Length: 296
Image 1 (cartoon, rainbow, N blue to C red):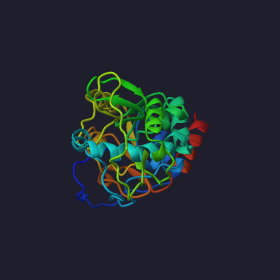
Image 2: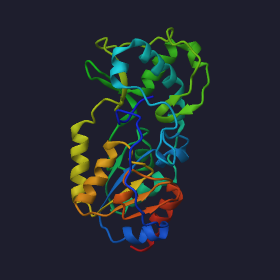
Image 3: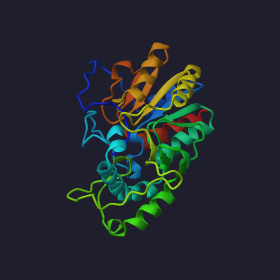
Image 4: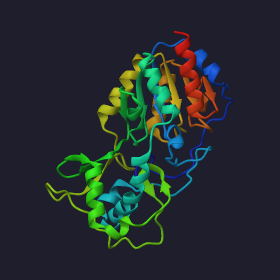
């Protein structure tokens, strides 16, 4: 539905090579050597919170690619389809709660080991778990923004407006999909009423980065500066198939910094990894946080 980031659905050709593997204990041992870590998280960090991921363990698309910014801005029917599905999909996002992975990363921040957490997710669960040093690389679904006057508003108010103007749609039910989408197929969306911005009449979109849209430069600048100050990088629950996240693994490797990963499947950066734990993020990070806390 929304978000990310690579402009095509073509299979990415990945370098082939063995990745040193490890478990939670080995990961804790290597992370204990680093005083400051840049953490990058992806969809695999939030799946235990009930939010589906776009990709499978091989890094391939499970579903149709999300909407492009140009289509959303230029086609009223595309906007109606987007917001009708989002009307239902928002329910799963608004009910989602942080899981063990989010809480473990917040604990690692409190211990002073995480210099910055850069997330590709748009669900706000890291902040809900207590993390404070967070860059939402792709924005947040709990806000909407007018593309004309740039006024930012809470999604909750926008959701109420959508439901008021589309009561019959609000009574529907549909399976949750990634990024606050819902699998609402077989419907005509012409009747779905999408409000304009109350201030200027402009087009309202979620405050997230769509395909075909650039990440705000300040977010990349902040993440890059934190990486330069870090001793290592930890990737959690991301295949790194999109350039917006992959570039930080490349940059870390060029700077001679070790890159570790916790991911149930391959990543685009496997050839750059110092170690990868092919284990669930929640259980792995909880153990890592406990070991590092005991070893202080």
